[in-house]
Image (cartoon, rainbow, N blue to C red; front, side, top):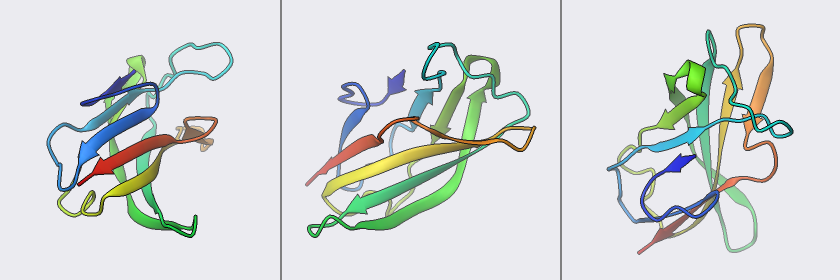
Length: 117
């Protein structure tokens, strides 16, 4: 579940300077599609801008919020400057479970953020 304006699959479309609605996602096991239990876990969010030469520039590396641990809901609240450049970005939520295990979501590919002028 992605919760944001203009969501299609794991792609979101936003405008330069947007900080309104947070990016909220429900994490599920890739194979079983069961919700990931985030009890006792910590979350972070990374966002990279894809440059014209296909390199990625790190824009955000910050803590994310666990909204509902039993429902696997995490969110990142956009900050001023996060989306200051039009273009395509890739995003990943990283979870550090209480066991110390680290997992990145989505498990395959990225959340694609398209920022329009």
